[in-house]
Amino acid sequence: MPDRSGNNRIDSFRNIVEGSGLLQLIFFVPGIDETLRVGGRGSLTTEPDLLATMMEFGKLPRVVLRIDVQEAYFHCGKALMRSRLWSPDTRVERATFPSIAEVIHDQTSLGEPEPQDVVAARYETQL
Image 1 (tube, one colour):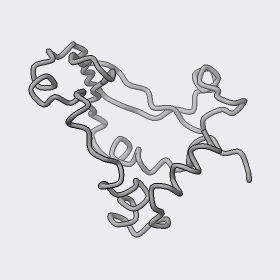
Image 2: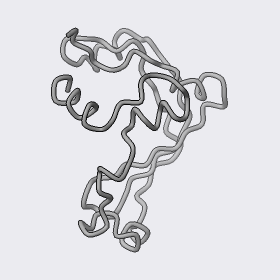
Image 3: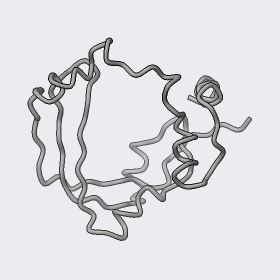
């Protein structure tokens, strides 16, 4: 089986290229209620020096998302505390939820609707 890093698809960047480029990110750390929020304007680049800083497993990315940050701030943990997001007794049983492959196939008719055990087995060999 060939070594693959990433899925070689960049269609996720369509909104940045075709739209305003505005984006918002939220960073979660499991078990921590506060989050970091970052907003700005995204653009795609193939700048060689930047690509070189992101080499993984001996491979360069094809493109990099550059974000010109316009705002960055911590968000208090009240919403996560109320939701009990990190509480073990609120966890969803994996077997009750469709696999990511099934969700993508249902929404786009792309790929194969593989069950979670197939997806998990691939994670074991391709991480």
